[in-house]
Image (spheres, helix red, strand yellow):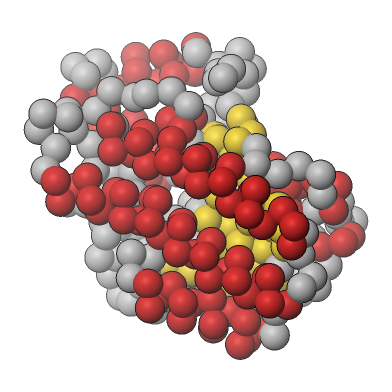
Length: 285
């Protein structure tokens, strides 16, 4: 039985949802369980390879196949689902993404800014400007552009809406070797708070979720890379991550997906401008 009946029939656009083990797919499936019609986005929804994959990171199944698998999983829950491709750094493509979402279902009620780059790591003194710009381009500029056009569509329809951005524990605490990522996520929280003020009078809530480490494809790569860069063996690094969490385990995709469903529901109608920790007690700010 759905937890939030008011979400039934709503239309939700989830960015960065093209990977089966990713947060985006988990969020899309959780919203589909509530009866939302889903628009899946990724950078190359129908491509045969993932152009943003870092060198040395296994891409597994081609993105087109994974997106199709996510779409099939969503439709198996009895809801309609379409997929779109867009480079979130390009304004015209983001505008087109939102237009496709509205064109497919006639409305847009929920935007989940989930897409992000988290694999470009390195010391501040060593990081190429191009890597810094790429992270900011997707994680912050992309979220802004999606918010800009999705918000405009919600305002035009006049029925309110929900915008949820997936930030990070790194939005509140610095992480060594991840300055660009942390800065982009701090910025995303600032964007969330400012947009909440502007969109409130239209009945649109704007919130962020700040998960700690989650074992997705990207999370696995980050753990392996950072442990190596810090000169610690993988099991020791992994145990240190677990030991920092009062609840004794890392985050799961379902933890973030459940929080997102709540924030999209009518039960969260009076919550806006917040950056909700979903970290098992690891992050206290």
